[in-house]
Image (cartoon, rainbow, N blue to C red; front, side):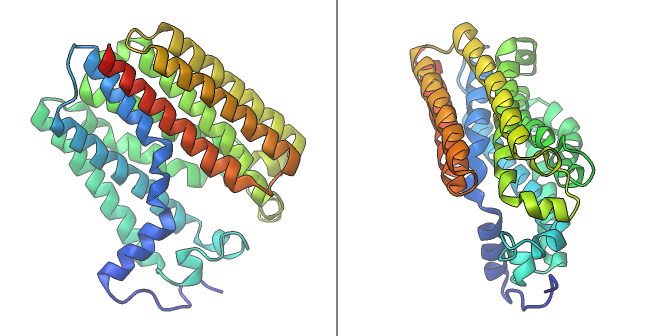
Length: 305
């Protein structure tokens, strides 16, 4: 089936609904809590709370950034998705959205991200706008790198790991001279890269047949599992250091960190036993919980400091 073989939605509302359903906006949960935590940490570093305008702009930019990343991914991978039984039901291969429509959505979300970044000019901070093109480039890179390097999982980790750095920069650029946000960003990088390797297990055979450079396809199941474990061990170490050293993080974040580490162990136990059978539980449910509890607990600690 070609990507344009079935009729796309006729009304703009139906088209937006089809795109939103396809890119799963709910999965913003993987990065958003860490951006919000970094926002609170950066504001606390100068003895204040984030303003309503800062809240609104960061939420707006986060949604726009993820929408850009996912619509670009769907547009770039349309033909690969059509050949993969797991992804053939997505909006483009199934014909619910055309490639030009997805490209328009991608460009529109990029423009919205730049617009949101420009909003920080009103708060006397030019850095978000100046760096927004670089952020867009990194967000698009993952969909391209998996065509030529197995490091694509790390690229995705970098893309999501930018979220706490970008949020802290938007609130208080000087906060980036402190280790807190870098430790948080490093945790996100290792955590995301590790679970993306696990998620790629579902497409192992497809990726081998289509010359996709995922770690499972290139190195095999056993090596992929051990590399994922290594990345998650590294992420766990950074999380423990953050919990132990960050001035504004206390008992709640320490408890949440312990729970997060237990969930990571559970995730690997599930995948080791059943490989791809319960991948949705290991990937979406457990990682979503990890993100939410760490972000919420950290913000509570900052508010109680």
